[in-house]
Image 1 (cartoon, one colour):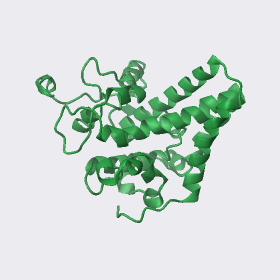
Image 2 (image 1 turned 120 degrees about the horizontal axis):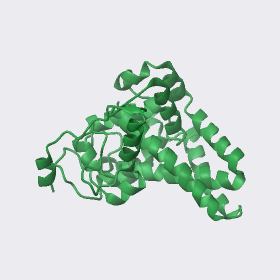
Image 3 (image 1 turned 90 degrees about the vertical axis):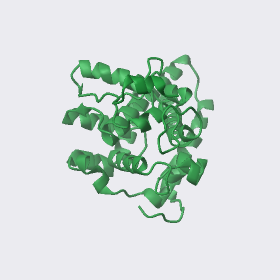
Length: 274
């Protein structure tokens, strides 16, 4: 992944900016408490799909799914508007190979906050990805189709919200929740490598941040994750809330998710860590 000039393409920047501008429509539609429920529900469903799907499943294979469930998880994750499932996972695997080192795609220490938070996604620098990084999932034609047509789940999700809930629900349940989902997710790349505590001496600058963990259903326990990347559970101590892991445990009881990979380190090392 050779570095190129930091240029931005209109086809990427315009939809991103348009979506953010669309949030102002909250002042144009009648408000009711029901709309907050729309925003919370559509945010929560897709945040779970991002962290359980894009991240813990496709990037790290920390548990197993059947082929149908795998496709559904990928489609739901892509409804977040964060590009294709293979694109997302390939770049994330590369990030872990070179975290906070020169080849890292989004290191805030090396590239700055803007680049780590959103610049690298909007830039045309990383439009493509190394297919060898994600060969294990690229063998599924349905995932390849989703990856090429990553806008389809976004469009379908937005359309369903509009048809079921109406224009006001569309504003709160798609526009507002998608923008919130963007920046909560992006904060893991930017803020979770700058602010928080370090329990484990990993080679990178990953940090545990309880506030980000709440916003992202467990992703804020980022230093834990970088220490044990394959673990399905990122909140290692009882008080480290990891909503995604809790839901995956429920799915495992139902037989949908299987073989959740545990945190592989002795209890003594966890207790003795800072």
